[in-house]
Image 1 (spheres, rainbow, N blue to C red):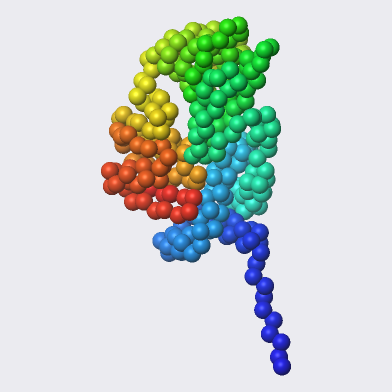
Image 2 (tube, one colour):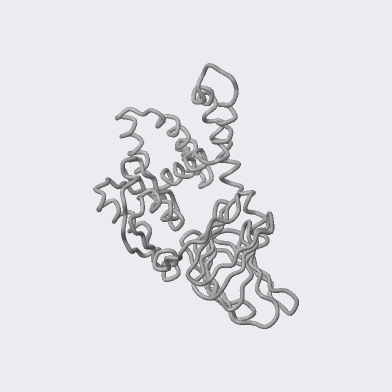
Length: 321
């Protein structure tokens, strides 16, 4: 009797590693692909959902700020060759390291996740009631904490977006920190968005007193006003368009003559994957529409239809072209 030795099936971890290794190879090939290579890439994506997931992850990290910073440092060095030619021999080792370090370990989020009382994932909204009865609606991919007792009335939005309905209280106002600003509030309804180092405050009802943490500059917002606070301080207060700016509170995304590039940027906040536009001519197409925010993929499909764009869908990856 002859023994037949079969190679064991790869473990899930090995299969994931193999898919990532292939994805890194495709990152190099797709820098300047032939038609046949493009066809082969599409076939590879379609062969296994894990391929699209691996490629989306590798591409997002490779195009992320950390790797871009390395490329800029190389570009700053005097040389007669381009950054691409410098990176090409080391492309895969660099990308592999980036994927392993940045993909497996999100160091920058560890302190936030340890401190935050409440977290929402991409596409999730969460309703909270604070100790004083005030209501909070956390939007997608947000982190929030609060301490409310006889001695303290403090809260912090670490990232993301939230809508607050603050109940009237005697004594201290609620102090909410979000990025470079602290809001002092009583008996008011307002929204705060803190993303990419910029804070946006929108007041629906009541007053909000704002204090910049950097230089102690102060601004009071009243109902119907909004303001942006960035690294350079306060912008001028602007009129609030509640139907558009606060549509997310009602579970909607509303756009009025908004460039498609901005629409896609907003949709990416709600879609747990990548949305990529490879047709630059679509970026400035004006979009007007009212959509459900819990169905971002359907919104992309609708946008593709009204702009006559081609849409390719893969697990965790959508490509407009």
